[in-house]
Image (cartoon, rainbow, N blue to C red; front, side, top):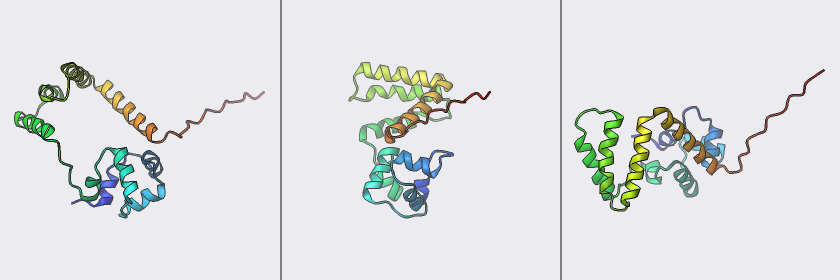
Length: 159
């Protein structure tokens, strides 16, 4: 079983420095260093990390995945039961989308809109990567609102 520090380290983006990781989570770089060495954060810091990374506090502390709602768990099981052989992204997405219809909390118009977005993302890999990158950028900026992008210095022509 993985340790807390291993689970915590897995939350870093590839190539992300400790300082960038700390800025994204809204905690100090010294705290990041302590957590990576195995020290457990206090309750407030755990909640910050949870909010910023969308992982549960339970998972960070114990490695146990949180329980799914019965509705979502039923859909996941049905999708798994229909997936008897490896499939391409497009096939998987179509199977998964059939179970969107079972989600009673969504209006039919919302379901169709979500299906349209998912099909668009599955069919265009470059667009999917662009959207995911932009989403991660926005999530980072949301957590570090005081971050200012430095202005480029103008070059002064000599002579």
